[in-house]
Image 1 (cartoon, each protein chain N blue to C red):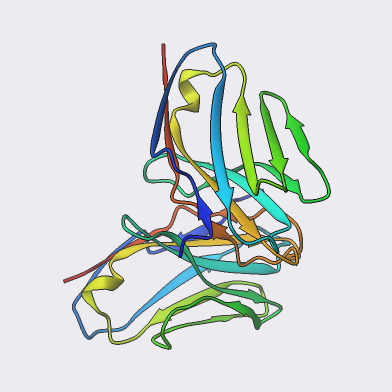
Image 2 (cartoon, helix red, strand yellow):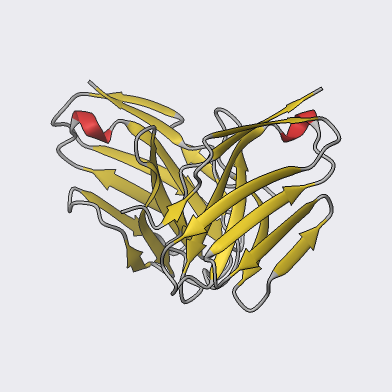
Length: 112
Length: 113
């Protein structure tokens, strides 16, 4: 039973446009969410986080939105750059613990 | 500051053998977590150690075990290897392991033949 879902396995976006990556979760106990990106042959790299007490967090080109009632979060990348091409994972935990549950990932391709 | 390091990077073992993987966290980080990544199952949490104690454990059989040393370095052991244990094993560290991001190492690619 997948508790964290990323229903789009892949996404292609033109350079300079907005990339929107989506993530849904089923466990209402989750209270802390992270986004990671992963390049081939490397470990995941932390991008941005959000706590359940917030509905938005911004860091440069990256913004994460959390809709608790819909159990949905999204990552917006504006503007998208070719270097953003990677696999993006969302992850969730409860009680702010370190046993994160990861989604299956979405492969983002930013086309020049 | 040096990142999370994992050794070895690649490993080939035979079914039935055992293996030990090592992880050195970022200096000052006391929480170390281990994950298994496979194409079919994605990233799955194995366990987390903090101050030499296992604090959280995922749904893996007892063949998977770990420990943490006083310098926060951690080892993961898999006994009686099975073909299905072939995966990328990732280690992640954080300062206290409470409400903060984890920093991942490059992983150890284990192949069981």
